[in-house]
Image (tube, rainbow, N blue to C red):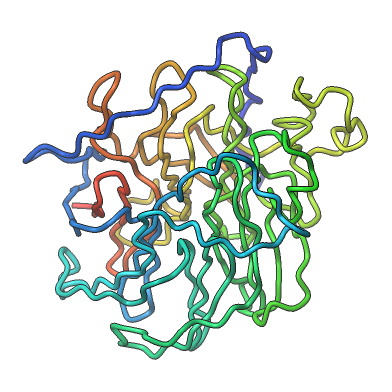
Length: 406
């Protein structure tokens, strides 16, 4: 039987600077009493946890406990950090909570039965991965690890460094996601660029704008894929077991440039940054520099819209969601700052079939935008709880939303 798969048409891209580059940061006003995000018909949205401190990423442990990385962007530096050989430990933590909180759900999964400070004094923690009895954490300056026993509510042991990572730079791009391979023998680590478009020189971009691969002890480090300006969400597509990522593209080319994207990550693949975008579209700010690399740049699989700040990524493995959502991708879009009108500020859903996108992106969780200048919150990490509900980290409003099928 012949199966025809959906193929997204390449986005119609305007010329660079067709519209001016606009800085429009949202004013976060928080959620008024009785108001919350909206999900499609047939779903129920509820407040799962509040009074957190910039919850960015969520990981669910095998026993159902929920780890929440709480951290915020460190303060910007006046000049680009000069990173010797791409490596330098950073102490710039600002007022970030720099901790991981453990939430233990109630028996029905609808609320938090207890919460605990699981780990503290970390350097901007983000991604977390449990492999057997070891917890790996992607911090701003290093991947670290610590021993874990099921049921623990606190770890006081100082984590051990697995491998140092480069720090500093444009908007800091500090989020380091950590995902094991299917066999649990390797780690994949996302490291965003240290600049918008390499304006401080490629010597400051060593091991940046990449997805790295390493052994569990940090040995045999290699660049798995490169030219990805700021990859954040990283997940395995459940049917084909291929690695996918969502990437924040570059700024300051206008309202409709450059689209953030969802793409399968190909080993050794080059995705254009900083010389080109969405395939072989040359960035005028790097004109004529590397035509050889532009010629080999891969075109991403799926456009998610310009300046949406697509960060979170998880694939639906929940038996409790309708069949339409089975194996599709949920994407937390944190929202724009470099666009004249707000875009993003939602959880989007991209349907998948046979391991590939099979339809247009849909609204799944919306209502974050209050008006043309204000927002109630900003979604980031998305993942499924053990009971099959979708959990959404709202870092601007310091809470986690729960979306369950009725």
